[in-house]
Image 1 (spheres, rainbow, N blue to C red):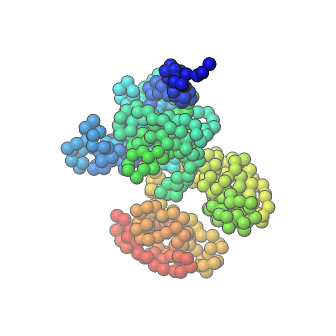
Image 2 (tube, one colour; image 1 turned 90 degrees about the horizontal axis):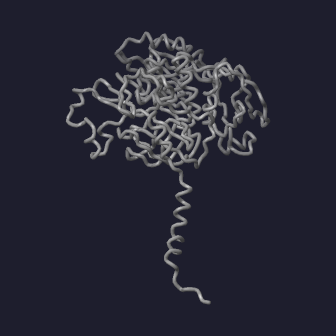
Image 3 (spheres, rainbow, N blue to C red; image 1 turned 180 degrees about the horizontal axis):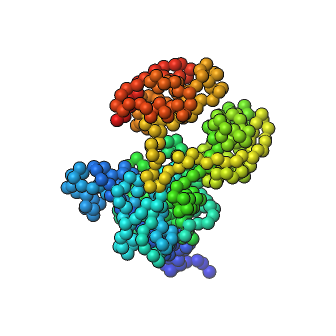
Length: 466
């Protein structure tokens, strides 16, 4: 008996279809998640007085030409009308609490929330937290659909995730992808790093900000916050705030209207290969303490410059960027175990976590401190330590720890690490004398400022703002 040299057409068709059917069976079906959860996703429309809206919000310049016809942006002189911004958010309680990004509502004169069924409500900003880029809103409504926040942080690289939002104002758009990485560090322009971002390849565009990121169980695992792009649109690098941070921030905003964070009082740096060898480590790891705040939590606990923190509150610290993520989520006043490397030996100590300065914990009616971050000059300073004073041969000074971009200090050429000893004719001995001297500076005048940079004294001129 010989085999037919030609395949039976039916057999051949089945042979070709089987791989496709298997592949389809392995892919997730997002229809149930979209249908169930879309009613609790909202569109947020903000209004700004003046010629410019929030720089983080999509305007006509951000939209492809063929999309602009859907929006009332054309032929309106920007100086003669209110500007609008758009974003996304989601409802977390039936009585009207809504989570979104801080940058979606920052500086807005009014915030309007639109539900899927086209109902619209004026929203009250309950609180904002610029450090995590989260905001909590509330609308006067009841029996609303809600989303469930995931109760654990078991998300892994490679998992499928889904986003729902309003990219370019196109309401209730669903996009899917996978988790590309976990714990990404994206320092802010203030060089703060409190959010271990989830990186995904989900298509996120302007207008998606503040919308939810779901796992396959339909639970919110993150809040879409940022994209990396060279074109203005998605290129597969999207970042979401993890649910662990969302839970912490939302709970504080609901309870106190502002957010405070754990604070250690150290300056840290990464450990490279050479440093690892010099400290006796088997590989680069941990956060190297380069400086301590006098009488801060770390100083009180006995930490020293040169210590390498490798484990904090029973969490491994692979690099210096991971330490702020852990410390920031710990409630101030909590005592936690810390594992360090000192003199090539492992030691364990206890540290009582401090709180980030209350005056620097943003009150959520304004979104910033009364004087603004960095004060009149845009400088964050601290009193110079005794060792620094002795090394430089001076009796008092403050050290610049941060220079706010586009501030007076930045425009004058000040940089972190500068040691300020004199403002005008006032000797600077501490943060208190610095603040009093700055407060007394006449508006609109130029004053000399004496500093020491890399051991060399110099003067620069400051133009005091009006």
